[in-house]
Amino acid sequence: MWILAIIFFQCILNVFSEDLRSSLYFVNASVQEVVFASTTGTSVPCPAVGVPPASLRWYLATGEEIYDVPGIRHVHPNGTLQIFHFNPSSFSNLIHDNTYYCTAENPSGKIRSQDVHIKAVLREPYTVRVEDQKAMRGNVAVFKCIIPASVEAYITVVSWEKDTVSINVQTPRFLITSTGALYILDVQNEDGLYNYRCMTRHRYTGETRQSNSARLFVSDPTNSAPTILDGFERREVMTSHRVELPCKASGHPAPKYRWLKDNRPLEPDTRFRQSVTGLLIERAQSSDTGNYVCEVWNSYGNAEVVGRLQVKEPLKAVVSPKKVKGSVGSQVSLSCSVSGSEEYELSWYRNGEIIYPGNSVRMTGNNRENLVMAGMAKSDGGAYQCFARNGKMSTQDFVQVILEDGTPKIISSFSEKVFGTNEFVSLFCTVKGTPEPRVTWTLDDEPVIRDSRHRIGHYTNQEGHVVSHLNISQTTGPDGGVYRCICNNSAGAVSYQARINGLPAYDQ
Ligand SMILES: *[C@@H]1O[C@H](CO)[C@@H](O)[C@H](O)[C@H]1NC(C)=O
Ligand SMILES: *[C@@H]1O[C@H](CO)[C@@H](O)[C@H](O)[C@H]1NC(C)=O
Ligand SMILES: *[C@@H]1O[C@H](CO)[C@@H](O)[C@H](O)[C@H]1NC(C)=O
Ligand SMILES: *[C@@H]1O[C@H](CO)[C@@H](O)[C@H](O)[C@H]1NC(C)=O
Image (tube, rainbow, N blue to C red):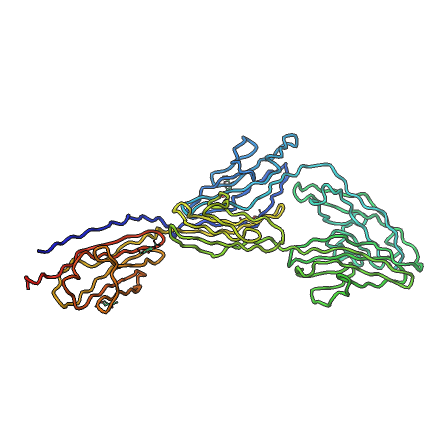
């Protein structure tokens, strides 16, 4: 009699919701600061977006979701944060001078934008001044537009006037430097006949100012040691930008100039140029950072300008790997490399929530730049972000971690069989899963031992499924029984079994 029994160890039906058409990304990830005039207000689009459209929310850096304040602050349905114009008396630090961020969420997960400092600038009374200058005929005169420190960051010198006529690049012997100073070269007696004034404009409020009138007192050249007219103490520039280090002196005879960097003569470089106003550096690079000395001398003495140039690189974070497809239960390791600064604070976020080290989460490296997570649960999938922060600067990068339910699933398998004596029987199980499952075989719950009659082998087919064979040659009666293939990986296990019977001798 044959016993045909087929028992399935039914695997869980996995509905896995990986949606490759869904993504999250950033526009304008470099915006760190939005400055606006209280008289105009501002609108800031959420720097994070998604496909399909993500739901966008704004928060204060403290994590508080922001609320609408009628007529003061509003978040539009398209995710644009609007701060309305306001009267200086309604200024509120919390609203008008604070750090915000925005989050974008869709089926891929949730990402959090860089921190955006939003700062209102109020109209405030200020004046700009110019001081009278003295110069020897044939020497140089330098006029500076003196701006109060409280507004200096917002004010630019837009022009200079000689009496009421605007000075421009066509005016011979006159030039305006990148820092807004007015130089008069090869001073002539007639230069003393005019009034000089600077005009400024507030970058955000648009307000313009006109300075007082200043005069130039021209004298005959007399032998004298150099006196510094224009110099610098500190300059900061972003890498690949142009920077001017001013160094100009009066003196008779005309002084000579020499530049030193970190106490050594400046090495020749096609990016460096000594101009009338000082040293011009094109496409600054971080190796240009250092202490600069401009030595000035003539036969009556010497003088120097000593200043420091700092070339800054933008803070940048890069998470690797770029794409992670893992399986539930597996370990996921991410690492974040930060450039642009030696000093920064690094934090990891999963779907917008900060990640803390714990039993299954380790953070290694000097700055916790490696994130190792064991036993990933399905809910751990989504967007992982690395944030680097240094003062007001912040940057981030993110990676989408897709977790498949990689539990092994049997695709096809052997069927119940009857064999005679001395036959060749081949059993197989085809299984899919991530990571690639291992297959073991049992007969009546005892492991099948490989020997000259029992061959076990496996290969991976074109679909990436594992095909495992158990081949038995020269069958005998005791080969009958319940055969089972057990397929397992870190995500789980599944097995299939069926009875294989030998034809009883009396049947033959
Ligand atoms: C990025 O931000 C700047 C400044 O806020 C804005 O002028 C520009 O249009 C923005 N670009 C995009 C693609 O949103
Ligand atoms: C969002 O909506 C506001 C109000 O309707 C509009 O002014 C703004 O231009 C929109 N911004 C974007 C980025 O679509
Ligand atoms: C088992 O037998 C099948 C069918 O003849 C063959 O394709 C397979 O390569 C064999 N595997 C081993 C490990 O002998
Ligand atoms: C898979 O099954 C084998 C044999 O039963 C067992 O030794 C092994 O530990 C299992 N592996 C996992 C990851 O469960």
